[in-house]
Image 1: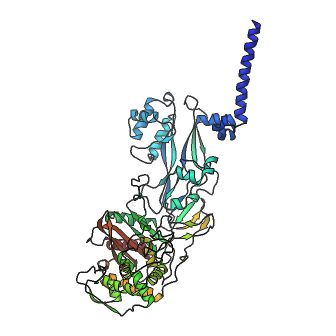
Image 2: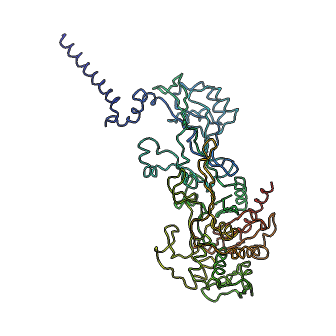
Image 3: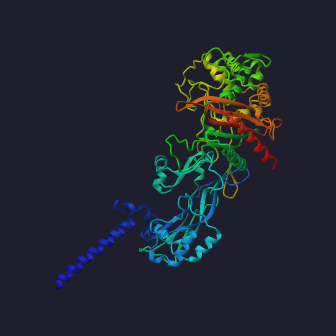
Length: 617
């Protein structure tokens, strides 16, 4: 009898020793294969900490991502407001039915609907109104009444909203989104160490993408709510806020945008029915980007098509420029000496070859070079283009910044940027001739292939057709170049990055284009500016003579096709006021039916009037 008791006691002791040994192994040897799933937790404090972690529920209040501001210090992203947070707790520990009914009333739902949604909660969440992307915004009175209810698992907490509701999302700023595949490919070590998570938001386009490494910050601000093993609140622990201890973050990116002007132009463009196209406003002195509007509208999280047209920034997409390119053709002809200002051309409406004709039936008759630009005569400019060599036209286009990316960039690391930086990563370079190809412009053909350009190619290219492609940003920058007597600037979108306290981290200075084929003569630039004044005074832009500012510019209509159907891209690029230029503006309206009135010209006038009015306020 005693022998059996002794054997049983020995077996029980052995079992207990095995359990104790197993627990010691897991505690002291977290790297073992058996405990791999717990290794990260045990490395940071063992099983005691893991036990606490298992009882807490975390909710991120602020990702710690840096924000964007306009040139006047107005916030473009980032606001904090109060929201209702729901934590997963047991039904019988939540509170009274009366309190639940009052909460439902405050949230605008029935008690049954509230309880149903709460029962579905597995991780802490902010309450969202049906169909809304962001948590419900509480008034001060709502927040106070909800707090007085003292319901377990319900808290009023500050929520950091990235995109402000008072104006539309902006293509130039871009958006953030989850991109686990990219994180796995680019940052595997940081994922393995726990520094980054697959579920975190990363920059998906625009400045959000190009400045992502700086903007992502140094950590999140989260709240922990402690519960026991039965999902009941642990009284005495309740909520605990965890946040980074670095007072220099989050960073502030100061843009060159004028938020008020940007928003008014967007509202005006929508009121005028701009469905597809872009508007770019540059500072006439240094090419800073003051406003950049793109349509269709950006709707973060609602990308339906495979080609990404819902979020593409049309201000930096290259399309056929039509007669706006005649500015480049005239500059090339004057630089090459194949035409002079007093020369006259005869237009009877037909060029007689290459299938070219003038837009004006019957022609313009006899006109000078300046009048040819004012009236946008295809015959005059086809004639001029055929006198040029392909290299001469290409060289002048390059000197004016056409056919290469225009936006501000650095090709080497500087300041906090450990790699080359381009603020407008999605920008296209455009092109002049299709067979001219570089890794940058993505044109058709093979590197090093010689350009075979006959008279027909030159004639059609000279009027901005065939293979010529230009972005609205390049068109606006072309105007700035002419206003600065041929000096090509790089349009800048961010002027500096600041720490959270306002101290400057790095300045991104306005700068000249870093490469190009020389520079056109000041006299050539002046001749083109006079021609643009004639366009508005009595040429194709005479409909916009009246306005708050006297303006000048060049209209354009480019023939294209969409799904096999003939369409036109409508353009207008110019500046104002004429006597003391302040802004250069390019407007593109895409895929309009042939024969439509030039909507871009009207939009240009409206944009200039908005700018004039805001300047006077």
